[in-house]
Structure formats: structure tokens, C-alpha cells
Image (tube, rainbow, N blue to C red; front, side, top):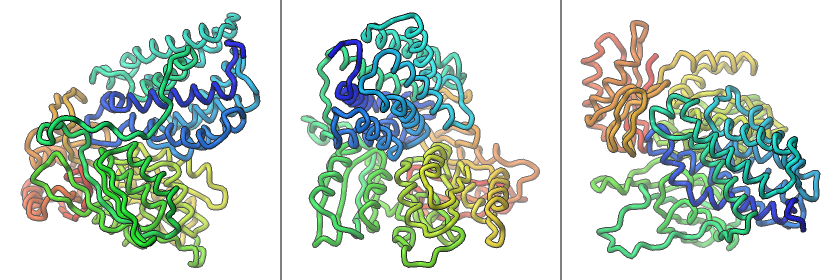
Length: 549
């Protein structure tokens, strides 16, 4: 085989190598995120996206170009999480739409595929920003075309020049986005794409790369008392099985859990229930996986880095939201909401939401999670409430992959916006009229949330230190400090104006009812002319979620 073309088998290995590089550098990419919040970040989202594709790829023949392309495209589309993951999946989709037509790929075919990849990805983003993964991808496509037109035919030279262009463009991203420059980082999504490209290139050049995935991390040889915690949360839950759970399912579950955590325990019980426990940085991810096998119960999440805290029940979707309603009459309207926390879940279900996808800011559900939810809602028209700006693209992607139901994604970026959207719904009105009313409703809601910083940084002119409390509004950081109540109070002051009438506060699982009520008293004293409503949200990681209307 000539070194100047890429066969299906070589392309498959290059893709797996790129996935491996991304997986290996996931934590570094996470650290590049501008906001220092304890979330499921870019590295995590991109890695889970590409590992979904890698799993599909390893289940097909690597000698068939069409099979390789179908596997990586379908796997990445369904597994896409977060905006970065969705964009990566669209780049892969566009690339494979061209590659699938050829038995081997030379410079001309790679050029054509690169152009299609970028065009597909840009089309998926409503408001593309320069200085992001899209910018790096566009630079790659531009360089691919330039080299092709210049008559370059040597594949190693061609790919090497493209990689260098990608790295140089990535280094310039802080000059394109002021927020990156202020934080002193390059774009995290762009870094993820560079890792994928570098892995593929290194394998092409003959570097030996371990192409196995989901291997458990090595145990530390330090005594337990001295060992630094690798993962922040412990998660325990039970799955009440709704279908057969065989040994293959158990192996798949174990491999997935090992890719996101350690201290894995899976215990089956008479083919009726499965008990799961692990340590992880994204407690919502194993819950999402568990939902594929049945209903969840007995959910406990504990912050391992807060020793005085005891495990608390959290993130359990209402039972009605977990059972497929196949035997119910098909109805005109249905609702799906992304939510986390017993209290917030209960609010959504009481407002008529049919299906709760457990997740949100701390764990971005995948496109496949959205598709599973859509399948479980027996309605002609389904409104999806992502309730997070990093989930909207995955919801849109699920909409585009659904043919038998009309899916309307309401671009709610916060839990308060999602609640307002449902309240704005009118059963007697049409789809378009409701979509307009719900969008108008979310436009009138100001949202804020309070969490802690996971690292030192500077953003929005705020100097932030690790473990500081941060008040985050719709457009950025509003307050920072070491006193949680003061930070929350300052955030709300920034959110209110002369037109404000109501402040709703949802307190999380790490805030006691007594502390929440004491804080409500402070609010009522500070804002005597406003109505203050306090409700239990039960959300992890975010101490308070606030709306001002």
C-alpha cells in the first residue's frame, strides 16, 4: 500500500489513535475551560463523544471504508455531549460523508472531506464564534485545500503541514476571544481537536500507540491517608431492571464506568435489580447509563472532598419519568426536561413534564439520551427543555435525528428559564404559538447560580481563587468571595432592578433547610419591596439557583 493514500484499515487505526490522545489529555483540556466550575467540561464531553464512536468502530470490519465511516459517524452523533462534543461529531459526520465514497483516501479526497467537515459543523452552530474549535477546523480545511492546490502529494508532508497549521491557529485563539486572553488559556475545544489530529498523524508516521480504551486506572501505592483524591464524588444507585440484563450488558456497563471513575462495584440481584457504586467527577454520567437498563432508585451522591458531609439523596428522576408510556393513548403534546435534584425534578413533573433526563450543568446528557427520552414520550409534538446552554446543541441534534414526532427545542439555558417555559405553555394553542410564548417567557427571566471555584483564574475582571464562592449570572461572573451568603446576596443585587418583582431561590443538596431559611431572612431584609420565594431544589454542586422576574 502506498504511503500516499490512507486505506480503510489505516483510517480506522488513525481515528482510534486520535481518540486515545483525546482520552489521555482529557484532564488537561478540562483545565483550559474558562469558567473554573466543577462541571462536566470540554475534555470530558469530547472524550465521551469520541469513545462512543470508537466503540462502534471496534464492532465493525476495519477493511470496509463504508462500514468504518458509518460506525464513527453514527457513534459520535449519538454519543455527542456538550457543544464541543456535538461540533466534533458534526466534523466527523461531514468528513465521513465524503470518505465513504472512496476505497482509499489521497490528498484530493482528504481535501474534499475536510471542506465538507467544516461546512457541516458550521451549519450546526447557530452563531459561530471565531477563536473556537470551529476556527481550528476551518484553518485545517483551508490548509488542506492550499496544499492540494499546490500539488503536494506526499501524505506525511501533507498531514504534517496541516497539524502545524492547526497548532498555530490554536495558539492564536486567545487573540480572537478576549475571554480566553483574560484567562490566559487557548480554546479547550480547539485543543481537543488538535489532540485528535495529532494522534492520527503520529500513528500514520509509525508511532506505536495503545489503541485499547476504558482500562481501569492504576491503584496508587500511597497509603490511603496520603493519597490525593482523583475523583470528587461517590455515587451509589440501584437499577430496577425493565429488560434482560445479561453478561454482555454487565461488561459494557463496567467498561463504561471504568472510563469515568474508579472503585467500581456492580452487584446483580435475581435478574431484577443491579446495584452500582463508584467514584467519579461527573455523578450524572453513571445515572444516565443506568437509565438504559431500567428505573433508578436509592441514589446517593457524596462530595468526597467535603469530609463532614454525608451522602445525600440527589438526582433521582420521578418514577413516572422513567417508565415508558407505550400503553397510554398518544397525546398531542409532551415535555422532556433536563434536570437534577429531587426538588427541581418534582417541580417539573408537577407542571406536566413527561420525562426527566438527569443532568445539567454538572453532567451534560448525550444526543442518545435525548433520543431515548423522545422514544419514551408518546406524543405527536414534544417540547425539549435543555435548561443549559451546553445541552441545546445535543437536543437540536436529537431533533434532527427524529422522524416520527415533531420535536421543538426551547433554548432554555437555565433551570428557572425551563420552569418559566413550562408555565407559559397553553394546551389549547398550536405548536408555533406555544413555541413563541415559551421563548418570550424565558427572555424575561434573569438567572443566577452559586458554586465554588476549582482553580485560580481571572475572568470578567474578577480575581478568583480555588474554593472561592462564585455567583454566576446569565452573562458571566457577578460576584466572588469567601462567604457563601454574601456572594449570593451580591449576585442577586446585580440581577435586580426597578422592574424586578419576584426572587425565587432553589437551595441545593449541600445547603441545610435551616441555613436556607436564614438566608431567606437576609434577602427579605435586603429587598423589602420584592417577593422572596424559597424552594428546595436538591441540586448537587450548586448551592443556590436563583431567578429574578
